[in-house]
Image 1 (cartoon, one colour):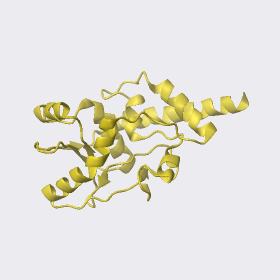
Image 2 (spheres, rainbow, N blue to C red):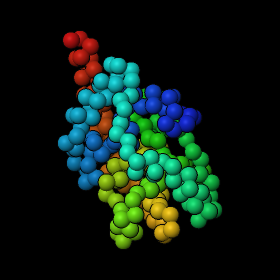
Image 3 (cartoon, rainbow, N blue to C red):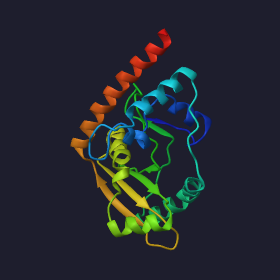
Image 4 (cartoon, helix red, strand yellow):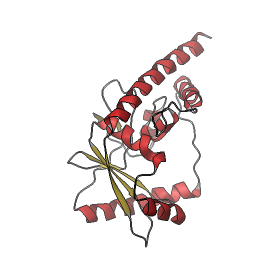
Length: 201
């Protein structure tokens, strides 16, 4: 596990993402049910373009997403109080020196437990509370983060001020992680071929 010590969202962090599949986008490669994603080719072309230009493309960012970023620190502090632990904030994590893919967790604990927090709109948070489990849409991100780090557990938190928080312990699914590792390796091989083809052209 290689940890890049930088501030998330700063220039170094964005540049480290150039052309690199990241856990928040693993759902574009493998679906939560372990099937190939229909978004894989578009995502591959995006990364190929980034590699050739050397620039990370601007991603869609709305008011809800900005609110989530601003409330993340508040949610992290609550989690630390709830479980009497300290969360280490990190910039970016790669599985090894090859740096073929990465994750940017909302934090990691010294006992090798990862932390992912979402601060959704109130109706979405209530739906998460009622379901009482990690929403399926985040399975590739959370399982992918465990693939990258080698951790066996990731805590998923949904937070909305004034309402009960949801904290779910997510165990590593070795079968899913194996499928994801295979999919990522194939994706990266195809990405390399795509970049080479464009360079030749």
